[in-house]
Length: 514
Image (cartoon, rainbow, N blue to C red; front, side):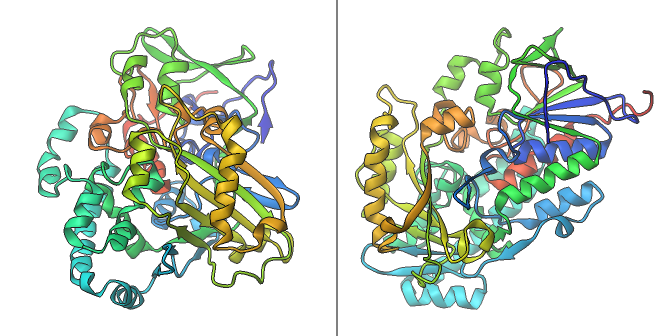
Protein backbone atom coordinates (compact mmCIF):
# COMPACT_ATOMS: atom_id res chain seq x y z
CA UNK A 1 0.00 0.00 0.00
CA UNK A 2 1.04 3.60 -0.56
CA UNK A 3 1.16 6.42 1.93
CA UNK A 4 0.30 9.76 0.39
CA UNK A 5 2.94 12.50 0.66
CA UNK A 6 2.00 16.18 0.27
CA UNK A 7 3.69 16.70 -3.09
CA UNK A 8 2.87 13.30 -4.60
CA UNK A 9 1.56 13.55 -8.14
CA UNK A 10 -1.12 10.95 -8.76
CA UNK A 11 -0.52 9.23 -12.11
CA UNK A 12 -3.49 8.11 -14.18
CA UNK A 13 -3.72 4.69 -15.81
CA UNK A 14 -2.36 5.23 -19.32
CA UNK A 15 -5.40 3.87 -21.18
CA UNK A 16 -8.03 5.88 -19.31
CA UNK A 17 -9.00 9.52 -19.41
CA UNK A 18 -11.75 9.15 -16.83
CA UNK A 19 -10.72 8.95 -13.19
CA UNK A 20 -12.47 8.12 -9.94
CA UNK A 21 -11.64 8.81 -6.30
CA UNK A 22 -13.12 6.44 -3.73
CA UNK A 23 -13.31 7.73 -0.16
CA UNK A 24 -12.89 4.82 2.24
CA UNK A 25 -11.44 1.34 1.84
CA UNK A 26 -14.25 -0.60 3.49
CA UNK A 27 -15.83 -3.49 1.61
CA UNK A 28 -18.21 -1.09 -0.12
CA UNK A 29 -15.40 1.18 -1.30
CA UNK A 30 -13.15 -1.70 -2.33
CA UNK A 31 -15.91 -3.41 -4.32
CA UNK A 32 -16.80 -0.09 -5.96
CA UNK A 33 -13.16 0.44 -6.92
CA UNK A 34 -12.99 -3.07 -8.39
CA UNK A 35 -16.07 -2.53 -10.53
CA UNK A 36 -14.95 0.94 -11.66
CA UNK A 37 -11.52 -0.43 -12.51
CA UNK A 38 -13.16 -3.18 -14.55
CA UNK A 39 -15.11 -0.52 -16.44
CA UNK A 40 -11.84 1.24 -17.31
CA UNK A 41 -11.68 4.05 -14.75
CA UNK A 42 -8.38 5.09 -13.23
CA UNK A 43 -9.16 4.57 -9.55
CA UNK A 44 -7.59 5.97 -6.39
CA UNK A 45 -8.86 4.83 -2.98
CA UNK A 46 -8.15 6.99 0.06
CA UNK A 47 -8.49 5.76 3.62
CA UNK A 48 -7.57 7.25 6.97
CA UNK A 49 -6.65 3.91 8.59
CA UNK A 50 -3.34 2.08 8.26
CA UNK A 51 -4.90 -0.89 6.46
CA UNK A 52 -7.84 -1.65 4.20
CA UNK A 53 -11.11 -3.17 5.32
CA UNK A 54 -12.80 -0.34 7.21
CA UNK A 55 -14.97 -1.99 9.84
CA UNK A 56 -13.66 -5.30 8.52
CA UNK A 57 -10.05 -4.44 9.35
CA UNK A 58 -7.98 -6.00 12.13
CA UNK A 59 -5.42 -5.32 14.84
CA UNK A 60 -2.68 -7.65 16.08
CA UNK A 61 -1.50 -7.83 19.69
CA UNK A 62 0.92 -10.32 21.25
CA UNK A 63 0.52 -12.70 18.33
CA UNK A 64 -3.30 -12.57 18.35
CA UNK A 65 -5.11 -11.17 15.31
CA UNK A 66 -8.39 -9.55 16.26
CA UNK A 67 -10.72 -9.11 13.29
CA UNK A 68 -12.67 -6.05 14.38
CA UNK A 69 -15.88 -6.27 12.40
CA UNK A 70 -17.89 -8.77 10.35
CA UNK A 71 -17.30 -12.45 11.09
CA UNK A 72 -19.96 -14.15 8.92
CA UNK A 73 -20.23 -14.37 5.14
CA UNK A 74 -23.60 -15.70 3.97
CA UNK A 75 -23.80 -15.17 0.21
CA UNK A 76 -20.49 -16.10 -1.49
CA UNK A 77 -22.20 -15.65 -4.86
CA UNK A 78 -22.10 -11.88 -4.34
CA UNK A 79 -18.31 -12.04 -4.28
CA UNK A 80 -18.13 -14.60 -7.06
CA UNK A 81 -20.05 -12.16 -9.26
CA UNK A 82 -17.84 -9.27 -8.17
CA UNK A 83 -14.70 -11.18 -9.10
CA UNK A 84 -16.29 -12.40 -12.37
CA UNK A 85 -17.18 -8.80 -13.28
CA UNK A 86 -13.47 -8.10 -12.99
CA UNK A 87 -12.54 -11.10 -15.16
CA UNK A 88 -11.23 -13.12 -12.22
CA UNK A 89 -12.09 -16.16 -10.12
CA UNK A 90 -12.98 -15.54 -6.49
CA UNK A 91 -11.90 -18.96 -5.21
CA UNK A 92 -8.39 -18.38 -6.55
CA UNK A 93 -7.92 -15.40 -4.23
CA UNK A 94 -10.08 -16.13 -1.16
CA UNK A 95 -10.53 -19.31 0.89
CA UNK A 96 -13.97 -19.80 2.45
CA UNK A 97 -14.71 -22.38 5.14
CA UNK A 98 -18.37 -23.50 5.41
CA UNK A 99 -19.51 -23.85 9.01
CA UNK A 100 -21.83 -26.39 10.59
CA UNK A 101 -23.51 -25.63 12.88
CA UNK A 102 -23.82 -22.04 11.73
CA UNK A 103 -24.16 -20.91 15.34
CA UNK A 104 -25.55 -22.05 18.67
CA UNK A 105 -28.05 -20.06 20.74
CA UNK A 106 -28.00 -20.53 24.51
CA UNK A 107 -30.50 -19.51 27.17
CA UNK A 108 -30.07 -19.08 30.90
CA UNK A 109 -32.06 -22.20 31.73
CA UNK A 110 -29.38 -24.28 29.99
CA UNK A 111 -31.32 -24.98 26.79
CA UNK A 112 -29.47 -24.75 23.48
CA UNK A 113 -30.51 -24.49 19.85
CA UNK A 114 -28.16 -25.08 16.94
CA UNK A 115 -28.81 -23.65 13.49
CA UNK A 116 -27.62 -26.36 11.11
CA UNK A 117 -26.49 -26.53 7.53
CA UNK A 118 -28.37 -29.68 6.50
CA UNK A 119 -32.15 -29.30 6.24
CA UNK A 120 -32.83 -32.64 7.94
CA UNK A 121 -30.55 -31.72 10.83
CA UNK A 122 -32.23 -28.34 11.14
CA UNK A 123 -35.75 -29.78 11.20
CA UNK A 124 -34.63 -32.33 13.79
CA UNK A 125 -33.26 -29.51 15.93
CA UNK A 126 -36.53 -27.59 15.67
CA UNK A 127 -38.52 -30.73 16.49
CA UNK A 128 -36.34 -31.41 19.54
CA UNK A 129 -36.62 -27.89 20.93
CA UNK A 130 -39.92 -26.50 19.64
CA UNK A 131 -42.11 -29.38 18.40
CA UNK A 132 -45.33 -27.37 18.63
CA UNK A 133 -43.90 -24.74 16.29
CA UNK A 134 -42.63 -27.00 13.49
CA UNK A 135 -45.54 -26.23 11.13
CA UNK A 136 -45.23 -22.52 11.80
CA UNK A 137 -41.50 -22.71 11.17
CA UNK A 138 -42.03 -24.30 7.74
CA UNK A 139 -44.43 -21.48 6.85
CA UNK A 140 -41.86 -18.98 8.12
CA UNK A 141 -39.21 -20.45 5.78
CA UNK A 142 -41.58 -19.98 2.85
CA UNK A 143 -42.14 -16.37 3.96
CA UNK A 144 -38.38 -15.80 4.06
CA UNK A 145 -37.83 -17.14 0.56
CA UNK A 146 -40.53 -14.90 -0.92
CA UNK A 147 -38.94 -11.86 0.68
CA UNK A 148 -35.51 -12.92 -0.52
CA UNK A 149 -36.73 -13.09 -4.12
CA UNK A 150 -38.45 -9.70 -3.86
CA UNK A 151 -36.10 -7.85 -1.51
CA UNK A 152 -32.61 -9.19 -2.18
CA UNK A 153 -32.59 -10.43 -5.76
CA UNK A 154 -35.11 -7.83 -6.92
CA UNK A 155 -35.23 -4.62 -4.94
CA UNK A 156 -31.73 -4.83 -3.50
CA UNK A 157 -29.87 -5.26 -6.78
CA UNK A 158 -31.23 -2.29 -8.68
CA UNK A 159 -31.19 1.48 -8.19
CA UNK A 160 -33.76 3.11 -5.92
CA UNK A 161 -32.88 6.75 -6.54
CA UNK A 162 -36.09 7.79 -8.30
CA UNK A 163 -39.48 7.98 -6.63
CA UNK A 164 -40.93 5.86 -9.42
CA UNK A 165 -38.42 3.14 -8.47
CA UNK A 166 -40.26 2.93 -5.15
CA UNK A 167 -43.80 3.43 -6.44
CA UNK A 168 -43.66 0.50 -8.85
CA UNK A 169 -42.55 -1.78 -5.99
CA UNK A 170 -45.39 -0.79 -3.64
CA UNK A 171 -47.62 -3.73 -4.59
CA UNK A 172 -44.84 -6.09 -3.48
CA UNK A 173 -44.38 -4.24 -0.20
CA UNK A 174 -48.12 -4.43 0.47
CA UNK A 175 -48.39 -8.10 -0.53
CA UNK A 176 -45.49 -9.09 1.73
CA UNK A 177 -46.60 -6.93 4.67
CA UNK A 178 -43.49 -4.77 4.81
CA UNK A 179 -45.33 -2.63 7.36
CA UNK A 180 -45.10 -5.47 9.89
CA UNK A 181 -41.94 -5.77 12.00
CA UNK A 182 -39.63 -8.76 12.01
CA UNK A 183 -40.65 -9.66 15.55
CA UNK A 184 -44.35 -9.29 14.80
CA UNK A 185 -44.08 -11.50 11.73
CA UNK A 186 -42.16 -14.19 13.61
CA UNK A 187 -44.69 -14.04 16.44
CA UNK A 188 -47.49 -14.69 13.95
CA UNK A 189 -45.79 -17.93 12.91
CA UNK A 190 -44.34 -19.41 16.14
CA UNK A 191 -45.40 -19.19 19.78
CA UNK A 192 -42.44 -20.23 21.92
CA UNK A 193 -40.69 -17.07 23.25
CA UNK A 194 -37.25 -18.65 22.78
CA UNK A 195 -38.00 -19.60 19.19
CA UNK A 196 -39.33 -16.11 18.53
CA UNK A 197 -35.98 -14.78 19.70
CA UNK A 198 -34.04 -17.32 17.59
CA UNK A 199 -35.90 -16.34 14.42
CA UNK A 200 -36.03 -12.58 14.98
CA UNK A 201 -32.63 -11.44 16.30
CA UNK A 202 -30.94 -11.18 12.89
CA UNK A 203 -31.70 -7.45 12.35
CA UNK A 204 -29.32 -6.73 15.24
CA UNK A 205 -26.46 -7.79 12.95
CA UNK A 206 -27.37 -4.92 10.62
CA UNK A 207 -28.16 -2.43 13.35
CA UNK A 208 -31.92 -2.74 13.63
CA UNK A 209 -34.43 -3.29 16.41
CA UNK A 210 -36.38 -6.50 15.58
CA UNK A 211 -39.50 -4.89 17.07
CA UNK A 212 -39.44 -2.10 14.48
CA UNK A 213 -37.37 -3.17 11.48
CA UNK A 214 -39.51 -4.09 8.46
CA UNK A 215 -40.29 -7.79 8.13
CA UNK A 216 -38.57 -7.80 4.73
CA UNK A 217 -35.41 -8.56 6.71
CA UNK A 218 -36.58 -12.06 7.62
CA UNK A 219 -34.97 -12.86 4.26
CA UNK A 220 -31.70 -13.29 6.21
CA UNK A 221 -32.93 -16.68 7.39
CA UNK A 222 -33.28 -17.73 3.76
CA UNK A 223 -29.77 -16.50 3.00
CA UNK A 224 -28.45 -18.80 5.71
CA UNK A 225 -30.54 -21.76 4.56
CA UNK A 226 -29.81 -21.34 0.84
CA UNK A 227 -26.17 -20.27 0.87
CA UNK A 228 -24.81 -21.33 4.25
CA UNK A 229 -22.66 -19.48 6.75
CA UNK A 230 -18.98 -19.19 5.92
CA UNK A 231 -15.78 -18.03 7.57
CA UNK A 232 -13.10 -16.32 5.52
CA UNK A 233 -9.75 -18.00 6.18
CA UNK A 234 -7.52 -15.22 7.46
CA UNK A 235 -10.59 -13.25 8.56
CA UNK A 236 -12.45 -10.54 6.68
CA UNK A 237 -9.14 -8.67 6.70
CA UNK A 238 -7.85 -11.28 4.22
CA UNK A 239 -10.92 -10.69 2.05
CA UNK A 240 -10.32 -6.93 2.08
CA UNK A 241 -6.63 -7.44 1.26
CA UNK A 242 -7.59 -9.62 -1.70
CA UNK A 243 -9.97 -6.93 -2.95
CA UNK A 244 -7.27 -4.28 -2.66
CA UNK A 245 -4.88 -6.50 -4.61
CA UNK A 246 -7.38 -6.71 -7.47
CA UNK A 247 -7.63 -2.91 -7.50
CA UNK A 248 -3.85 -2.56 -7.66
CA UNK A 249 -3.54 -5.17 -10.40
CA UNK A 250 -6.12 -3.18 -12.38
CA UNK A 251 -3.75 -0.22 -12.13
CA UNK A 252 -5.49 1.52 -9.25
CA UNK A 253 -3.95 2.91 -6.08
CA UNK A 254 -4.78 2.52 -2.41
CA UNK A 255 -3.57 5.42 -0.29
CA UNK A 256 -3.61 4.81 3.46
CA UNK A 257 -3.11 7.07 6.49
CA UNK A 258 -4.72 9.86 4.44
CA UNK A 259 -7.68 11.98 5.54
CA UNK A 260 -10.16 13.58 3.17
CA UNK A 261 -11.05 17.06 4.44
CA UNK A 262 -13.81 17.75 1.95
CA UNK A 263 -15.21 16.94 -1.45
CA UNK A 264 -14.38 19.57 -4.05
CA UNK A 265 -17.48 21.02 -5.72
CA UNK A 266 -17.71 23.37 -8.70
CA UNK A 267 -20.94 24.35 -10.47
CA UNK A 268 -22.86 21.86 -8.33
CA UNK A 269 -20.58 19.03 -9.49
CA UNK A 270 -17.95 17.14 -7.53
CA UNK A 271 -14.59 17.23 -9.26
CA UNK A 272 -12.33 15.56 -6.71
CA UNK A 273 -11.33 15.72 -3.07
CA UNK A 274 -9.11 17.90 -0.91
CA UNK A 275 -7.02 16.15 1.72
CA UNK A 276 -6.23 17.48 5.17
CA UNK A 277 -2.65 18.13 4.06
CA UNK A 278 -4.00 20.48 1.38
CA UNK A 279 -3.44 18.22 -1.61
CA UNK A 280 -6.21 18.42 -4.23
CA UNK A 281 -6.96 15.22 -6.17
CA UNK A 282 -9.03 15.86 -9.27
CA UNK A 283 -11.47 13.21 -10.49
CA UNK A 284 -14.35 12.85 -12.91
CA UNK A 285 -16.42 11.08 -10.27
CA UNK A 286 -16.22 10.74 -6.49
CA UNK A 287 -17.53 7.68 -4.66
CA UNK A 288 -17.95 7.92 -0.89
CA UNK A 289 -17.80 4.79 1.25
CA UNK A 290 -17.83 7.03 4.31
CA UNK A 291 -21.07 7.05 6.28
CA UNK A 292 -23.66 9.21 4.45
CA UNK A 293 -24.05 11.23 7.64
CA UNK A 294 -20.35 12.07 7.61
CA UNK A 295 -20.30 12.58 3.85
CA UNK A 296 -23.11 15.11 3.78
CA UNK A 297 -22.43 16.85 7.08
CA UNK A 298 -18.62 16.95 7.14
CA UNK A 299 -17.30 16.48 3.60
CA UNK A 300 -19.68 19.02 2.02
CA UNK A 301 -19.60 21.74 4.71
CA UNK A 302 -20.19 24.75 2.46
CA UNK A 303 -22.86 23.19 0.27
CA UNK A 304 -26.51 23.78 1.12
CA UNK A 305 -28.30 20.43 1.28
CA UNK A 306 -31.72 19.95 -0.26
CA UNK A 307 -32.51 16.68 1.49
CA UNK A 308 -29.70 15.50 3.75
CA UNK A 309 -29.29 18.60 5.86
CA UNK A 310 -27.73 18.43 9.29
CA UNK A 311 -31.21 18.74 10.81
CA UNK A 312 -32.56 15.87 8.68
CA UNK A 313 -29.64 13.65 9.66
CA UNK A 314 -30.06 14.55 13.32
CA UNK A 315 -33.74 13.56 13.22
CA UNK A 316 -33.01 10.22 11.58
CA UNK A 317 -33.02 6.95 13.51
CA UNK A 318 -29.52 5.54 13.85
CA UNK A 319 -28.52 1.97 14.59
CA UNK A 320 -27.49 0.93 18.08
CA UNK A 321 -23.93 1.09 19.38
CA UNK A 322 -21.63 -1.85 20.04
CA UNK A 323 -19.38 -2.81 22.92
CA UNK A 324 -16.83 -5.33 21.68
CA UNK A 325 -14.19 -7.00 23.82
CA UNK A 326 -11.50 -8.86 21.88
CA UNK A 327 -9.23 -11.10 23.93
CA UNK A 328 -6.68 -13.84 23.50
CA UNK A 329 -6.19 -16.67 26.01
CA UNK A 330 -3.05 -18.77 26.38
CA UNK A 331 -2.98 -22.56 26.10
CA UNK A 332 -6.76 -22.97 26.03
CA UNK A 333 -7.33 -24.44 22.55
CA UNK A 334 -8.34 -27.82 24.03
CA UNK A 335 -10.66 -26.30 26.65
CA UNK A 336 -14.36 -25.50 26.36
CA UNK A 337 -14.98 -28.23 23.79
CA UNK A 338 -18.69 -27.39 23.71
CA UNK A 339 -18.07 -23.82 22.52
CA UNK A 340 -17.99 -23.55 18.76
CA UNK A 341 -17.17 -20.84 16.26
CA UNK A 342 -20.32 -18.74 16.87
CA UNK A 343 -22.34 -18.68 20.09
CA UNK A 344 -25.19 -16.38 21.09
CA UNK A 345 -25.57 -16.08 24.85
CA UNK A 346 -28.99 -14.77 25.84
CA UNK A 347 -29.50 -12.60 28.86
CA UNK A 348 -32.58 -12.83 31.09
CA UNK A 349 -34.57 -10.42 28.87
CA UNK A 350 -35.11 -10.03 25.14
CA UNK A 351 -37.72 -7.38 24.35
CA UNK A 352 -36.96 -5.52 27.60
CA UNK A 353 -33.29 -5.27 26.70
CA UNK A 354 -34.18 -4.09 23.20
CA UNK A 355 -36.29 -1.35 24.76
CA UNK A 356 -33.39 -0.25 26.97
CA UNK A 357 -31.05 -0.08 23.97
CA UNK A 358 -33.28 1.51 21.34
CA UNK A 359 -36.00 3.37 23.28
CA UNK A 360 -34.59 4.41 26.63
CA UNK A 361 -30.93 4.63 25.45
CA UNK A 362 -30.08 3.10 28.81
CA UNK A 363 -27.01 0.98 29.55
CA UNK A 364 -28.54 -1.99 31.37
CA UNK A 365 -26.72 -4.22 33.83
CA UNK A 366 -27.77 -7.38 31.98
CA UNK A 367 -26.76 -8.16 28.42
CA UNK A 368 -26.88 -10.65 25.58
CA UNK A 369 -23.57 -11.52 23.94
CA UNK A 370 -22.45 -12.75 20.54
CA UNK A 371 -19.29 -14.78 21.16
CA UNK A 372 -16.94 -15.39 18.24
CA UNK A 373 -14.19 -18.02 18.56
CA UNK A 374 -12.33 -18.04 15.22
CA UNK A 375 -9.40 -20.06 16.59
CA UNK A 376 -11.63 -23.16 16.35
CA UNK A 377 -11.50 -22.80 12.56
CA UNK A 378 -8.40 -20.71 11.83
CA UNK A 379 -5.09 -21.35 13.60
CA UNK A 380 -3.58 -18.14 12.19
CA UNK A 381 -5.51 -15.93 14.62
CA UNK A 382 -3.59 -17.03 17.73
CA UNK A 383 -0.26 -18.53 18.85
CA UNK A 384 -0.16 -22.31 18.83
CA UNK A 385 -2.45 -23.84 21.44
CA UNK A 386 -4.04 -20.50 22.28
CA UNK A 387 -7.51 -19.09 21.65
CA UNK A 388 -8.88 -15.89 20.16
CA UNK A 389 -12.29 -14.47 21.10
CA UNK A 390 -14.57 -11.56 20.24
CA UNK A 391 -17.48 -10.79 22.58
CA UNK A 392 -20.05 -8.29 21.30
CA UNK A 393 -22.91 -6.71 23.22
CA UNK A 394 -25.43 -4.28 21.65
CA UNK A 395 -25.59 -1.03 23.63
CA UNK A 396 -27.18 2.41 23.13
CA UNK A 397 -25.62 4.74 20.57
CA UNK A 398 -24.54 8.25 21.56
CA UNK A 399 -27.61 10.05 20.15
CA UNK A 400 -29.17 11.06 23.45
CA UNK A 401 -29.07 14.02 25.79
CA UNK A 402 -27.10 11.91 28.29
CA UNK A 403 -24.86 9.55 26.30
CA UNK A 404 -22.93 6.86 28.14
CA UNK A 405 -19.54 8.12 29.32
CA UNK A 406 -17.43 5.19 28.17
CA UNK A 407 -14.30 6.53 29.84
CA UNK A 408 -16.06 5.81 33.13
CA UNK A 409 -18.14 2.81 32.12
CA UNK A 410 -15.69 0.77 30.03
CA UNK A 411 -14.08 -1.26 32.81
CA UNK A 412 -17.34 -1.54 34.74
CA UNK A 413 -19.20 -2.92 31.73
CA UNK A 414 -16.30 -5.19 30.75
CA UNK A 415 -16.34 -6.75 34.22
CA UNK A 416 -20.08 -7.37 33.91
CA UNK A 417 -19.41 -9.01 30.55
CA UNK A 418 -16.62 -11.05 32.15
CA UNK A 419 -19.08 -12.47 34.70
CA UNK A 420 -21.49 -13.51 31.95
CA UNK A 421 -18.74 -15.09 29.86
CA UNK A 422 -17.39 -17.08 32.80
CA UNK A 423 -20.56 -19.16 32.66
CA UNK A 424 -19.78 -20.20 29.06
CA UNK A 425 -15.96 -20.28 29.08
CA UNK A 426 -15.17 -20.81 32.78
CA UNK A 427 -11.72 -19.78 33.93
CA UNK A 428 -10.94 -17.68 30.86
CA UNK A 429 -10.31 -14.50 32.87
CA UNK A 430 -7.03 -15.73 34.35
CA UNK A 431 -5.74 -16.80 30.91
CA UNK A 432 -6.19 -13.52 29.03
CA UNK A 433 -2.84 -12.33 27.65
CA UNK A 434 -3.97 -9.84 24.99
CA UNK A 435 -7.05 -7.68 24.60
CA UNK A 436 -8.63 -4.81 22.74
CA UNK A 437 -11.93 -2.97 23.29
CA UNK A 438 -14.19 -0.90 21.04
CA UNK A 439 -17.05 1.22 22.38
CA UNK A 440 -19.48 3.52 20.51
CA UNK A 441 -17.02 6.35 21.17
CA UNK A 442 -14.34 4.35 19.34
CA UNK A 443 -16.70 3.73 16.42
CA UNK A 444 -17.23 7.48 16.22
CA UNK A 445 -13.50 8.21 16.24
CA UNK A 446 -12.11 5.28 14.23
CA UNK A 447 -14.85 4.93 11.60
CA UNK A 448 -16.35 8.44 11.72
CA UNK A 449 -19.72 6.87 12.53
CA UNK A 450 -22.33 9.49 13.52
CA UNK A 451 -23.37 8.99 17.14
CA UNK A 452 -21.10 5.95 17.35
CA UNK A 453 -23.75 3.91 15.52
CA UNK A 454 -22.51 0.45 14.62
CA UNK A 455 -24.34 0.15 11.27
CA UNK A 456 -25.26 3.69 10.12
CA UNK A 457 -29.00 4.45 9.72
CA UNK A 458 -31.36 1.93 11.29
CA UNK A 459 -33.11 -0.09 8.54
CA UNK A 460 -36.67 0.88 9.38
CA UNK A 461 -39.20 0.93 6.55
CA UNK A 462 -38.99 4.71 6.08
CA UNK A 463 -35.19 4.57 6.13
CA UNK A 464 -34.90 1.83 3.53
CA UNK A 465 -34.93 1.67 -0.28
CA UNK A 466 -35.81 5.11 -1.76
CA UNK A 467 -35.95 6.64 1.74
CA UNK A 468 -32.29 5.80 2.37
CA UNK A 469 -29.47 8.00 1.02
CA UNK A 470 -29.27 7.18 -2.68
CA UNK A 471 -26.34 5.53 -4.43
CA UNK A 472 -26.25 8.53 -6.76
CA UNK A 473 -26.24 11.67 -4.66
CA UNK A 474 -29.38 13.75 -4.43
CA UNK A 475 -27.21 16.75 -3.49
CA UNK A 476 -24.22 16.88 -5.87
CA UNK A 477 -23.65 15.69 -9.45
CA UNK A 478 -20.86 13.17 -10.06
CA UNK A 479 -21.02 12.05 -6.42
CA UNK A 480 -21.97 8.47 -5.60
CA UNK A 481 -22.41 6.56 -2.33
CA UNK A 482 -21.79 2.95 -1.39
CA UNK A 483 -21.71 1.06 1.90
CA UNK A 484 -23.97 0.28 4.85
CA UNK A 485 -25.67 3.69 5.03
CA UNK A 486 -26.96 3.70 1.48
CA UNK A 487 -29.17 1.37 -0.58
CA UNK A 488 -29.61 -1.58 -0.09
CA UNK A 489 -28.24 -1.40 3.48
CA UNK A 490 -25.89 -2.96 6.03
CA UNK A 491 -24.43 -6.46 6.12
CA UNK A 492 -21.64 -7.77 3.88
CA UNK A 493 -23.89 -8.96 0.99
CA UNK A 494 -25.79 -5.66 0.87
CA UNK A 495 -22.67 -3.52 1.20
CA UNK A 496 -21.07 -5.28 -1.77
CA UNK A 497 -24.34 -5.18 -3.70
CA UNK A 498 -24.34 -1.39 -3.29
CA UNK A 499 -21.39 -1.34 -5.69
CA UNK A 500 -23.38 -3.50 -8.10
CA UNK A 501 -26.07 -0.82 -8.05
CA UNK A 502 -23.38 1.84 -8.45
CA UNK A 503 -22.08 0.15 -11.59
CA UNK A 504 -25.54 0.52 -13.15
CA UNK A 505 -25.58 4.26 -12.45
CA UNK A 506 -22.06 5.29 -13.44
CA UNK A 507 -21.46 6.04 -17.10
CA UNK A 508 -18.69 4.24 -18.96
CA UNK A 509 -15.37 6.08 -18.85
CA UNK A 510 -13.70 7.88 -21.72
CA UNK A 511 -10.98 5.57 -23.04
CA UNK A 512 -7.83 6.67 -24.82
CA UNK A 513 -5.45 9.60 -24.55
CA UNK A 514 -2.62 10.09 -22.11
